[in-house]
Length: 84
Image (cartoon, rainbow, N blue to C red; front, top):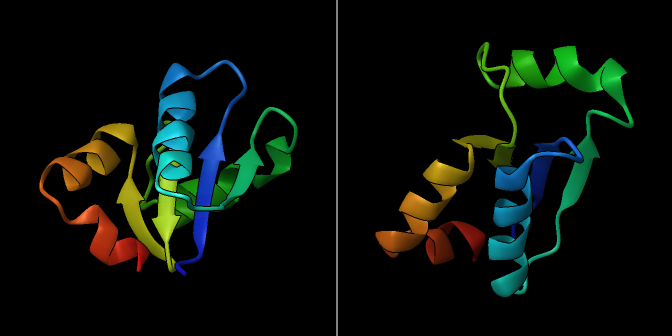
């Protein structure tokens, strides 16, 4: 099973959608809520190459991007390969 990390904020609807998509795939993930742990924001920005929006999703340490990127992988049939 892939290691999934997702940086989120409580009020972010795209974060909710990303988590639901991953859960629908039977995946567990580490959620880093930046509203609860704001000290980890710089970590996310560095890992995400300067991106400051949430969600930022990493699968096995590789940046996937946000919800739109995750959904695009699902539409192309490529997400399951990354999660295997």
